[in-house]
Image 1 (cartoon, rainbow, N blue to C red):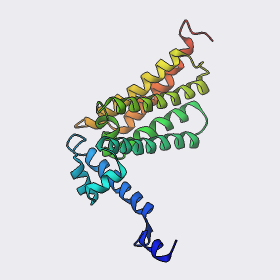
Image 2 (cartoon, rainbow, N blue to C red; image 1 turned 45 degrees about the vertical axis):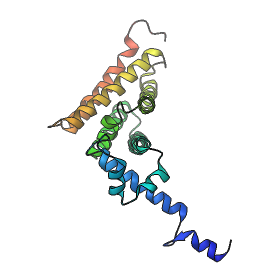
Image 3 (cartoon, one colour; image 1 turned 90 degrees about the vertical axis):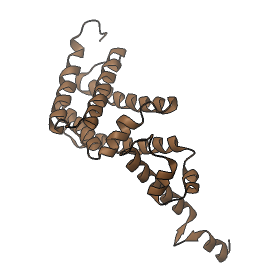
Image 4 (cartoon, rainbow, N blue to C red; image 1 turned 180 degrees about the horizontal axis):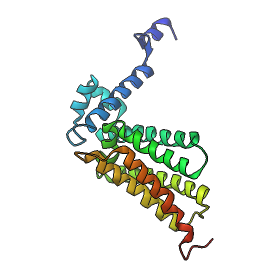
Length: 216
């Protein structure tokens, strides 16, 4: 490759791949801002591009359609919640109460730290399409499996169908709790939500090994 060829592939000291990555990041930031404030239905490709300072040509360089951007924004926000929760578990004392409280607190506070994140995760992705709904529920099942592992470690409950049901109940309950918090005019204090949810996690799963009919 000649010096001329190399120069033609660089602009402002950045190669083509770097510029494309920067444009994609700008679109993700614009998507989070618009989807998380005015909502997905009101966020046209033009509005997203205007917010990102890009032309529509560059939108389609990174995303096939608007829903693809929504899915990417959702995934990026879920990754922050996932990382925060797993980090909190790793850092907490390896005992039941500290682990339960750390996990719930990290989940709740990471979601609540940015109202746009909460709205994207719990409101804007719901019912958009069958494909996105399948993806959203797979994420919920992933969090439920984290709870299954927690219950196995601290309550020595076998990984059975009943434990799966219990974990989904808790994961679904946390989801609806955060939906309510996100949409409320006067949301409940986070400390209260965290304390109640952690107590339910500890005391609720602690009863499973005392229920009749479980094969131990």
